[in-house]
Length: 249
Image 1 (tube, helix red, strand yellow):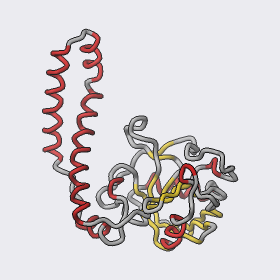
Image 2: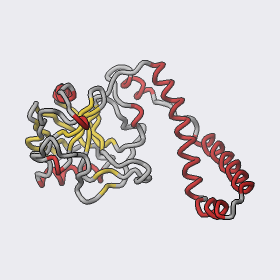
Image 3: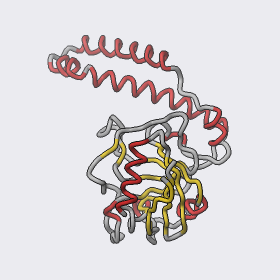
Image 4: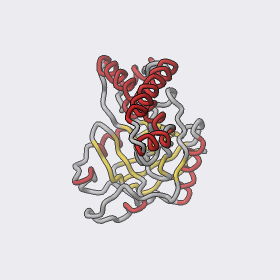
């Protein structure tokens, strides 16, 4: 497995890239070879959540400049390897735009984040599972609405309220049937162990591609997450990526 050294102004972080996410792995290695990240900053830092960087527009950016929208000119298909890889503390994952404009959950070509997260109680994880089940229902229903969009628009155009009500009831039946087929989302034993000990951000699981993890320098990520931040969660003093170098392929 490839390893990459991220030298920052607050210390070094070494990450291991997963072979099971080859497109993300190869892209990260390509950008490292090109020196793409050198001089960029961690532009979004949220304590007990994550540290995010990789925006090319962040190089020498004044504090007044909004950051977070810079990209590499392309996106990468999602590579969810879930539940094997999840958002435990130290996970390396790809940032992306929201579902409303990115239903395929494609990753940014360059922006990434390292999870710092927090420790969860067993009870809190059980509560999260219930929320995940509700979200799963909503996602299924939303997909069915998209698939029936033309029919819905035609009914609305014709003011066919009875037809709309009947279709809604039918889509709800299909939603519950599909959810029953999939089963309720549950955290694995490995997830529960990690989230109740080292911590993480379980609510991001299966929504963003996790493509690696910190193997050295997690204390540096902790140091970064503690810095004082200003508007838009940008550190008041830039935390730079001095260089991003491949140390093992």
